Image (cartoon, rainbow, N blue to C red; front, top):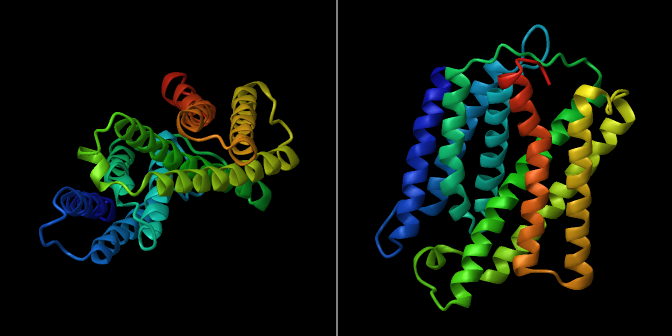
Length: 267
């Protein structure tokens, strides 16, 4: 618990320093890389906290709030590592506090639902790739939202406010499609390993999750095809990204929320 509390504090301090640096660029602030490194310290502590709550004698405890904490840990790790080479601090500002909140929720609402994971590496690979895909595509939807705001403000000739701290529109769009491409590959591997190694993927308790995941996969496939063959961008790309993400969210977190917290069942 102590590592989790320390992670929460450092996540919030890192967010404050990044936000102040973005909103007051003319003032003297701690070095950019130093702030990012501080954020990675929080990620390390967050990971240590997860290590104390996820493994159990029966398997991996992936209850709803534990899974949420793991997803935000992965998101924070990817963003902070990317920030060393890309100007993605704007994305860190909303996600790091959410990572802190996810830790608090996992501590407060300790999950009693354990996902019994066999030692078979195939099933473990399916779970890992599923979580990675969801994490990367979560970053993509926030990036798409920022891109939509940026595009609208530029079209209406209002370049002030948030637009001042965002990278150029072309760089934002390029990063978005890189995230979608990576997420699509991870989602493809997740579905492939599930198809090959899970015999009851279309059983009653998994059918909705499987079908929605396949629909999300098709949406992202069409989006990437439209991008590279038809040059889709702007509002079209943002709408398809939103549709794919919401479908995937319903497939994983939505079904998990209903089954565990509403129906009190293990998904």
